[in-house]
Length: 206
Image (cartoon, rainbow, N blue to C red; front, top):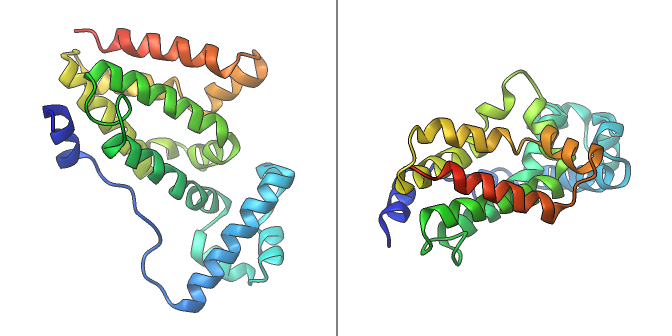
């Protein structure tokens, strides 16, 4: 294992593999709520679905829904967990260049392209999780993981101020920015991926 990969294993805050152990009825209610939310979000869009809609579709009480998830942004975050964990696993143990075994700059570029694709594929859910409250994006465990991953690779590449450069990469890949590029400016995903990976490689230079 190379030095950057060993550092990642030691320093990266792993995302939860799944929900904590809970009572069978609570687990069933959670699964029903998430399935209903995913179905309704896909059919109507996140903004058009209320917690009342989700509770009714799932057949659970609204109070149960609020206690378990807090609000709609909590539901969005829970739906993203499994997908985020899959990307995390590819970064830590998948094939290069996203996974270990490639030069740091190549891994960083591969992450930027993969994360851009992830945000684009789950745009409404990511947007809700990032904007639930002021600074919400910066407080999530997933953001901390992405930032640490970028910081470690930038440091291994010899880049100055790796924390600031990691922040710059992630700031360019917020849901708001990706939505603007894709739906306001009409840019294609391959075009954006090429531009983002080029910028990322430049940021990895000493």
